[in-house]
Amino acid sequence: MISTSNAGFPTSEQRALAESVRALLAAGNPDPWPRLCAEIGVAALEIPEEYGGFGAGVAETQVVLEELGRVLAPGPMLGSVVLAGQALLASRDEAACARLLPDIASGESTAALAWTGVEGDWAAPALRAEDGYLSGTAHYVLDGAAADILLAFAETGDGIGLFELGEGADVRAVATLDPGRPLARVTADRVPATRIGGELGDALGPLRDRACLALGAESLGAAAHCLEQTIAYCGQRVQFGRPIGSFQAIKHRLADAHVQLEAARSACCAAAAEPGPERSAIARIQSSEAFSAIAAEMIQLHGGIAITAEHEAHHYFKRAHGSAVLFGSPRAQLARLGANWLSEPVPT
Image 1 (cartoon, rainbow, N blue to C red):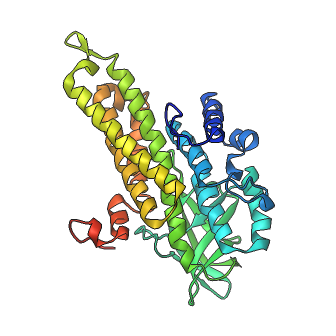
Image 2 (image 1 turned 120 degrees about the horizontal axis):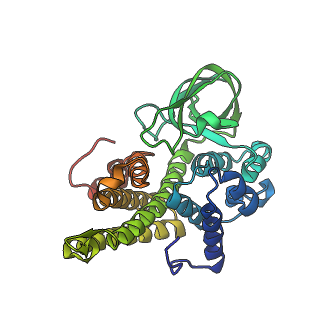
Image 3 (image 1 turned 45 degrees about the vertical axis):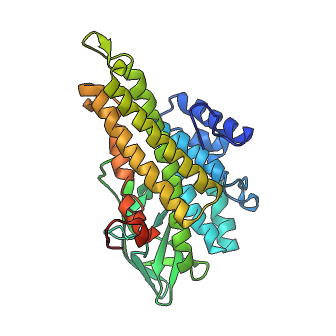
């Protein structure tokens, strides 16, 4: 995982990857995704070499996501590379992977995965399949409106399958709290679709875990940036003739934020080293709550300037609250861990 000092990296290669991504993003390109793919190969990291990728592990993708989160960089890393890419690999359909993954790995094509319904129940797909056609409406489709390849999980009557949608689906961008996270609604009315692989009901849980871990890394990077900027500002903003960062109450708030951030970092590192449902859920909970809390402190401690259009604080605040409900809220993640983690029952 990425830390401001690089001390948290277990390998020099991961440090170099983080530095390369950060340097490219610092160039200020409004659309860095093509360069990230062409010059660093971020979309190819976890894709096997036989499909045009580098065959790296989860940790390398987490490194990139954390750096992207620091600057809220646009790009389909989460939707195309993690969700769609890992869904294709889970299908074990070699022909489909050979046809679709090389272009995803190079960044020449982006993919989107239609999955959940309006209630956000990621445990089951919103679409249904019958005789080679898909019907239904999927919500919260990451980067769906701009995708070149549209995939979907669908109920088949005898399980759950992965499909590639043909022409005819109504894909519409929707208004979101966080304009930096493009979401779409996909409506299908007997749209022709090609099945990829076999029954994939057992793949939904691990893929959701992987998405939660990826979102945790992105949130961790964003939270780290918020804290760094807030600490710097508290050393500049003067009240009663002193920098506000010199007041004991402010020091306590910043120290608490630092503790939350490092707890989230530890959880994300542990989950990346040994992925699994419990560790992924904990990483998701810790990073989401840390990001939300630190983004709120950023707003409070920057004062009135933080809610102006010119300042970045409100963008991070919106990302924190949008990300908090993506793939299930922290409370929904607790429900997945089991009743012994909860102080009171919650609906699944």
